[in-house]
Length: 105
Image 1 (cartoon, one colour):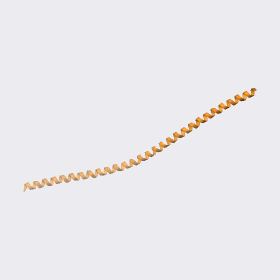
Image 2: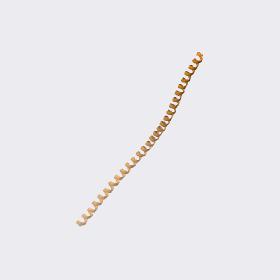
Image 3: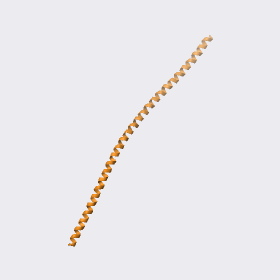
Image 4: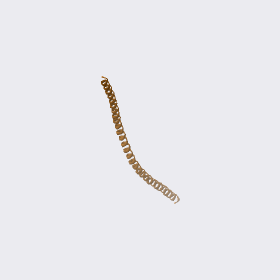
């Protein structure tokens, strides 16, 4: 009879150990699933960051081009203003000379 009690105790102990192992295995599975989800989310974020960096590169190149165009326009506008000022001064001098010539004669 003692053998039967010892076997039952042994089986109960083994059953508890197996249940503990099952709980640990379930926890490991849950952690693995959670980590997988986190890694997928992080992967998406990294891809978005990479895409944003590519867009920034393109925008910087466009900005450089636009700055060069603006600089060229600014230089040509400056030349136009100088020509206009020179023309106005020449016109004033010509009118002044004409008036002077009319009054002198």
